[in-house]
Image 1 (cartoon, rainbow, N blue to C red):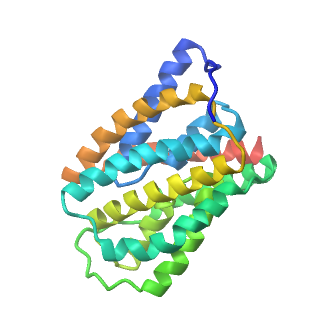
Image 2 (image 1 turned 60 degrees about the vertical axis):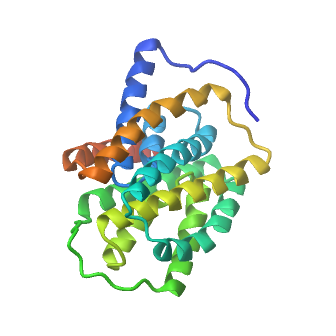
Image 3 (image 1 turned 45 degrees about the horizontal axis):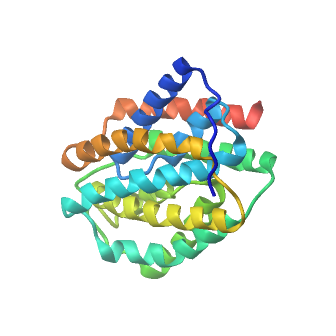
Length: 253
């Protein structure tokens, strides 16, 4: 499934790209996310081949979300009863989405619109840790999980950036609980989406595997920071700025 070749970047640009993508992994993992929307934005800005953006984002998601879940679960923030209704429907849906190949122009539009949604989520959702929690509605969770799973597999994300604000807005979990549930949700959906991508006969060049240890470094630090402390709002604003630039490039250039 993989073949060898070199990254088409100068040494200076490669180093800068590696530093930024590690920072993105740090930020996202601190709130229980895999970082796909950030990786997609960076890969778009650095003009990586559009056909590989989806699988690269899914693979990086698997590693970073897995690390993030490990640390949040270790601190006992994970709630199985909140997670499984989403997962039951999202896993097969993300496989279907990952299997489907869409026209690159349509993909750019969908991706650009999604990145705008991600920006709004970062800038507008106010998070409060002291919530008066409600019991989650399992039927509604099943429906939400299916929709998020399909979209996630289709465009190459784990779905956490969509799921997290829903859990918080519905008051089904605290921020830390939401981060833990989102991390495992992203992990399983990214695996499912990537398997759907491979089964459709697609490949992922081995040259991009160098990104795995780079995002893992940022992901481990971010997970430790997020599970023990809290996320950095200033970094969130910087990330939103990058997403805005990337979405503009996808939609208008």
